[in-house]
Image (cartoon, rainbow, N blue to C red; front, side, top):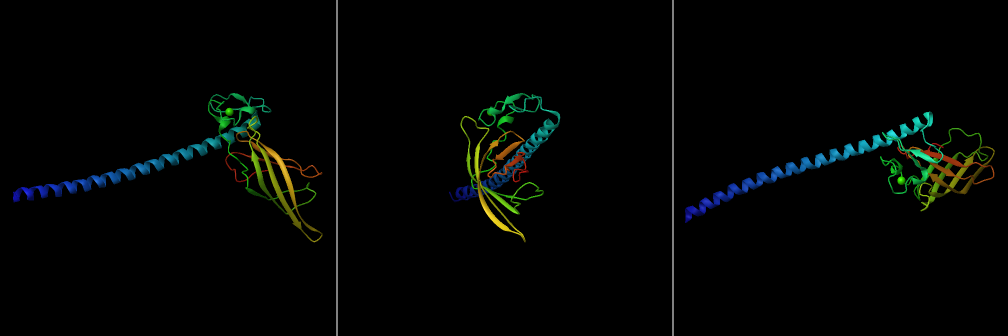
Length: 212
Ligand SMILES: [Ca+2]
């Protein structure tokens, strides 16, 4: 009986060591799976970035060569089957392009509460000649019947100071987005009698700035 107990104990010790080995193997396999998942996610992010960049280049080429569509009322899907679809179908939640291009850039480019600062590189036309201009977006609404033209409202703050005069002013702005992949345009109507408004284009990749 005593020998049997000793043998059983020895078997238990061997089994415990084997369980430890299996535990280490599982931990190594788990680490490999996590590393593999991270690698796949990185590849997907790179592919999405390249896809977005491709849309920008494609849009630029279309601007030079023409897209083959009636650009006033249509967009070209691009890719291997460059179909033309109505701009009314952009961002309506349904893939009307075979490659889904019409639904590829439907994020909010000017979310409520976002604040943008302007840098003037050339100004021969504004009557106020502001040195500082910031725009805070206060409203963004997607019309159910016209989802590719979201309505936008904003407040502009501008100021200037020099030897002759100084001022600061707040202006209420309203306008809309014109969504089209690679050429998402923001229009803000002129708030004053000089007829000067704001237009800028988000290319869908470098969306933290907007040439206007
Ligand atoms: Ca669509």
